[in-house]
Length: 136
Image (cartoon, rainbow, N blue to C red):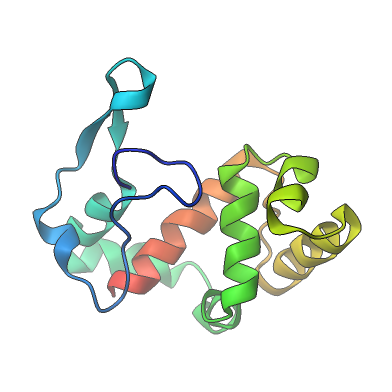
C-alpha cells in the first residue's frame, strides 16, 4: 500500500473507482525499513481471479460489513487502529478521541461484523475483506 505504510503517508490508495492496483506490483520495497519487502494487499486483492474473490466473500455476510465499509468514520477508526499496531492509546491519540470512545467503536465493529480487530488474524481478515469489497 504505497512505499510507506504509516497512516497519512500512503502513496497509493485502493478505492472502488481506482483501477491503478492492476498495474501495481504485489511486492514492493519499503525504503524506510532497510529495503524490507512488503506485500501490497491492494494489488493482491485486485489481481485475484473473480471465482477466488467470490469464494472468499461468500463466507461472510457482506450486508453487515457494508455498513462499516461505507461509514467513513468507522473505517478511519479501524484503519487507524490497525495502522497503530492495534494499540488503543496510540490510535486514540491519532484520532483525537478518548480511548473509551475508540473501544466503543471497536465494539460496534465487532458486534456488526463478528470480527474483533484487537485480534491480529481478525484484523487481517477485516483488511482483506475490505479490499475485496472495494475491488468486487
